Image (cartoon, protein in one colour):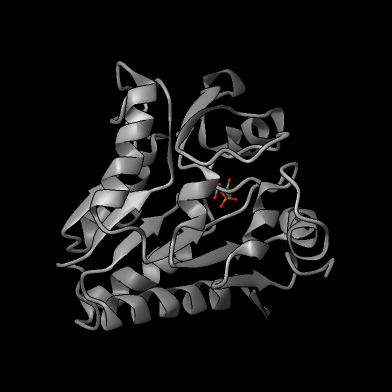
Length: 239
Ligand code: F6R
């Protein structure tokens, strides 16, 4: 595991964008695993800029997102479909981009379909991750086990509180989501985790310094051969 600590969030975002850009330049038909949330936004802005500058071309790339809320229409401004369009897809020339369907009539079948689609695409080359305050990756919440495949998850109180900022009220935050499982994340050839801010410091400490445990799902990343963690000083303050 390589850990890099930067003074500012902007530096973290630029470094993350550099790693993604290097991936796309080296392998133009890369399969990218993407995340939503605040952590990758600056990175996506930098990628958009480099695309506009003619430095990056995504026309052969495809992407799969980690997760989506269940029961939220894709047109809803807080859906991850809408988020990804606004923050990235509407501004670059990605060949194709896929998110799990949180409104599928058969959610279990949708979980299997998402895993199969990733496999059929050849697997994820580079997976971008944020981390929850409780150590979740994707929406794999603290539990007594690690779940391999894409799954339907009940969001914990901590995650509902953290995501409440995007919604009009706490009641409006969906309670269920569909998320790539830990096996899907660990199958990526390379993983890039971005964390910023003091509210991530404990999760980062537990991920990097404590035992591997499903109570801190990100801690399993220590068993992956190619993980880069990019932190600002606040997120690294307990290391
Ligand atoms: C998002 C995701 C989540 C977030 C995490 C951190 O697709 O899977 O695991 O990465 O909740 O969210 P932010 O970056 O908003 O702090």
